[in-house]
Length: 217
Image 1 (tube, rainbow, N blue to C red):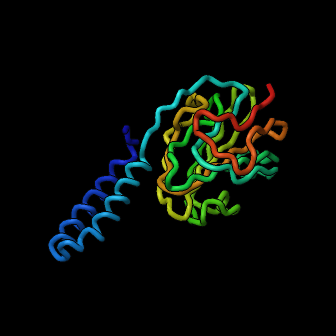
Image 2 (spheres, rainbow, N blue to C red):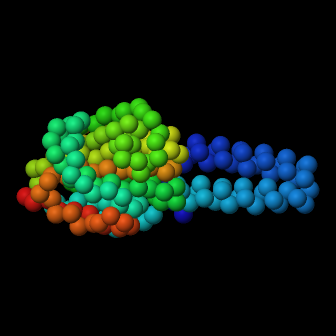
Image 3 (cartoon, rainbow, N blue to C red):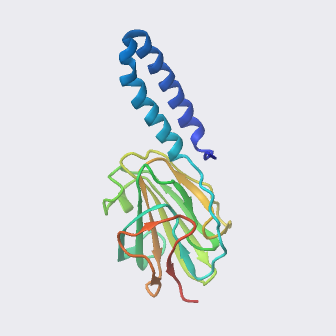
């Protein structure tokens, strides 16, 4: 199983903690140490599972908007995006549980025209206000259909680190990685009002593969 590069620090700390508690529990608890070691190993395995990098066949897209993350669609609504677009848009929000792959991918192809990191709170990621109050990043892409598409990584109650690798002027390719969020979190995509929304609330998405919307040229 291939692991994401963001796993290195977390796995090092997790390995030290597991080794230390295993040693102490065996030394002081004897056979009862299994009550400590077994749950620790399960949690240790879940950390590996969280940082997995699944193999995905990423296709080329022009009009299609691709699911940027693995997760569950929790919101589809018309909103006013006041950071970059300064206009109404359709917001599609996808919540990621700690068991989902947390690689963040470009939802559309084009060029990166805006990026900004915002420090903030750590409300639960499905809270509507988390989009504007939590720690987050905002990225905008001028799409191949000549639309400005904004998407936002949002830290959740558990997440404490957001990473995004893109820079202004980068070529964005729908389905390809641009960042990572550690543990539970959310991603919002803001689309033109005339976009055809393919997904619906409650849908489970596969990042880089599933089409969630289409934009008119």
